[in-house]
Image (tube, rainbow over all chains, first blue to last red; front, side, top):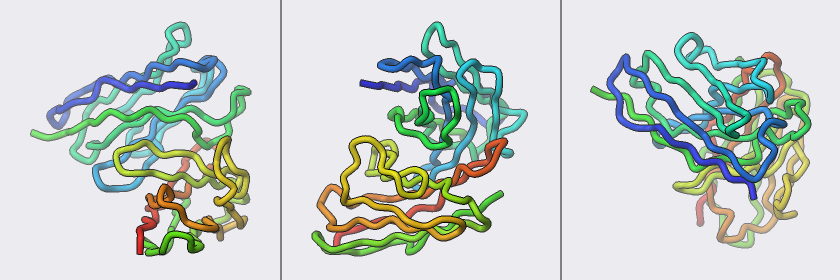
Length: 123
Length: 109
C-alpha cells in the first residue's frame, strides 16, 4: 500500500520560512514524478510544484517562483518543499502527491496523496 | 493560464438519482483532464483521467466525457458515500501550469 506522510507545517510569521517533508513508502519512489498541491482553508486546490523522478527538472506555479524550492532524496524516499518569504496568501494545507505514471514519463494527474500539512502565515 | 470553470457550484441530489457536473476550459485542453473527489477532512482522490478513464478501484457509477473545452462527470446513481466536492484539473501544457476548477459540491437533497 502506498503511503505518503507530510510533516513540517506550522505557524510562521510573514517573511518567514518553513521546510515541508513528505515520506513515501509502498512504491518505487525514484520512478515517479512528485507534486505539491495546496488548498487554502475552505477553498479549492492549487498545483504548486513538481519534480522529475531523478530531480533534474522542477517546475513551479508563478506565484511561488523564486520563493519555494522543491527537492527530493530518492535514497530516503522523501520529497521536500522549502518555503521562503512566506505571505499570508500562502496559508494552506499542503499535500504531496504522486504522478499517476510510474514510468518516469509525467502523466499530469495524481493518484496517491498524503493527508496534508497545514501552513499558517500570520503575525 | 488556462482557467477551469465548474458548474454548478452546488448540486442538490437525492440518493439514487443521477448527477451531472460540468467543467469548462478557457482554451482547449484536448482530453488532458482529470476529476477528483474530496470529502471533508480528507485528501483528494483521483476518479478519472484523460477525460474518461477510471482510475484504479473507482466505481463504474462514475463516468466522464468531453474533449477540448467542455467536459462532464456523471454519477449514475448517487450513493451516500458520493456526497462530496468534485474538482476538475487540466494537465495539457508543458512546462506545467496545471490548474483546477473551483469545485462542485454535491449535497443531499
